Image 1 (tube, each protein chain N blue to C red):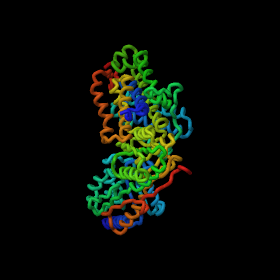
Image 2: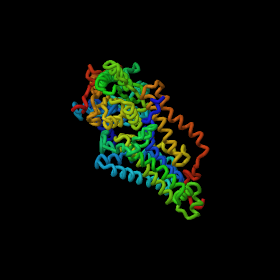
Image 3: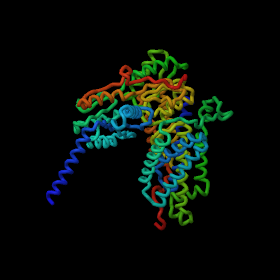
Image 4: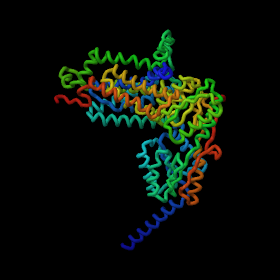
Length: 307
Length: 301
């Protein structure tokens, strides 16, 4: 049993959870204001490509991160324009954004790079004094990761604080729960939704970059393999709360890491069963967690003044 | 007036016939191919694309033309393309490059008995006279790679990142394990099938897991291994590959690659078609027939 639950498995879970946390937190802001963005995966793909390409060209990681975030910002603005200004059906338009991101990232990859190439991306940073803690493998589990992993986990309490303890968070929640009342109070519903959806885009771009220039250091077509959709599901799983999303991302990633470890050390269980496990456990947990959610009442409903 | 119109119709009819005869008798060999992943996947789809490019280079673009629809993992999408090509009658050979396309070919080929189809990796021609099948004895290069890896490992542990336990991926992995056992029975080979041909993040983490468990040599099959190759490079491990050359990506970590040379099969198929035989045969790439080639990577260079 000690061979299965090793420190490296927990460290692996933390690495795997990172893109889900970035994308899930961003989507939480969007959904708490009432906008469902199903295009997260497409924005992640574009962020992953543009961030990778920027590093490939400039060999500068900061530029890579900024370019990925800028890409997410532009795509987030596009989603906001479609959802808030044009009041389009959010589910369908989100799928359109996903397909756009999937296709464009493939096309750009084919034309600008052509074949998978590796880059020197973010490497693990050992936190002095902490990374050497041997007790329960704490040093290896928590303090030997790349910079973006630390950033993702730091954003969880920051997001919770912003959503629950600041006037901005109150505005976002008000717009998501009762946009008419928020409007009557003088809150500009459209502006708030533009802000949250664009922020969600930036975070999705960052999620993509966390894959291509930090975890994988390579880009390939459809690099995310649907991670953006899982991130959207984790928002529901987490009850629209940042710490809930963290818990969901960690649970999903831990079971994934565990199944890799189980097959990696030669434990004889069917591979199909091991691969199903993260999804089955996530669904079961979602059933029990669904009763204690804070689902925004106005989610997916375009705002019409006076309705 | 009537005579003039009859004359015009006659001229048009003659011109149309001339064009048709020209098309049917031109000496351009036209191929249409569908593949599940990208032409630059450094793996399965690229191996076929490279083969078609090689043949075009040899014959000339005026003698050999091909269209290649990549990224068609969804079988229904591939079915649409294959039917369009078959209906058009423009192609001498239609290739369905992926074992998931077998059912489509089995359904489609009897509807177009004058069109030649090829599909793989498999050896089943469904008893049809217009279907060629092709596969790769990937276990052969797998055995070579496994034996080499077993002789080179310092920790005595080797990690394998596989996609789904089917087709040439399974052949390669089984051959690799057998080769390692033959060269050094004390070496442990740990195999992880991630149940996906495309999940790069999961394949990368599988490679990380093998490294964390002490492996100093990694190998894997299919297009999702690109991240695993990057892990080998970063962690100072060695990489053995298959399907296509991954020498450029793996740089100094790459030791040996089993490269599929589908051009060997394609030449045989084209020769058969030239003789009027549209199918009914199965081909296998092997090291002996030159369809499988072992290519050295950047390690030690």
